Length: 318
Image (cartoon, rainbow, N blue to C red):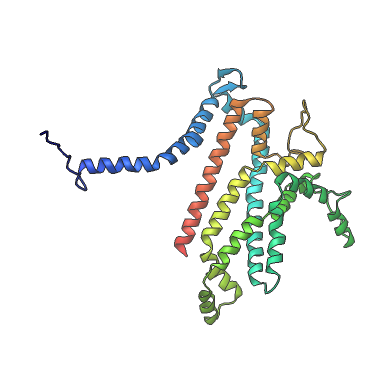
């Protein structure tokens, strides 16, 4: 009768046991590893590779650092970078503060909370293109109702999307109009703050501003960090609303052969993603577009890391 031998189970901590645990960990992580490799690592490496080439979707020619040298001479890169940074510096803080203020106001209402919340959330349900077209028509200085409303009070409204001085503030107003998602997130965070903390602060004689600064802000700081980081990333990738507003305000069409360059008026609405799109899919300079994409990626990483570090310092000091 043949004898059957059974392998002894590996003892915890032995090299065989650790090898088995490592293989199981890799098995569980494999979906994430495949996703990161396919959708992040490979596109990033391909972008770096094509950035050293002249590539128009049909021919590929090694160009060395020519695309990077041209980046330093391209005046529209400077213009689009300035416009994008303006949106980061002004539009993002305005949207975060306005959303927080609306959410705080909703928590203080005694009646009509659902109606008020619906009014502010409703614009987020409108598609970005339709919402932008509607907003530009509403702000039209000749036919839009907004300037006519201001005229009732003797105020002459500006040419919102036709004046370079007012175009970016107008985009900021458009962003505030669609702040419903951020408002709902802040509202959930504010309602989650324990009531007994406010009661204890009130007993200690803290006023409304003191309670907000010492109780509310520390308790919702993770939500603030999330809103700020996602807002900055969104502003750095700002594309659709600026492109549509430029086209509608200028009256340009996207017909075949059109030589329209985004950014009307006077390139004041030209953002870095728009210039990247124009270079890559209008001029078919894919190699140079890859350089712009790497510039955008690096800028996003720097802003995100700086914000995370600042929030971590603020949490440690509080």
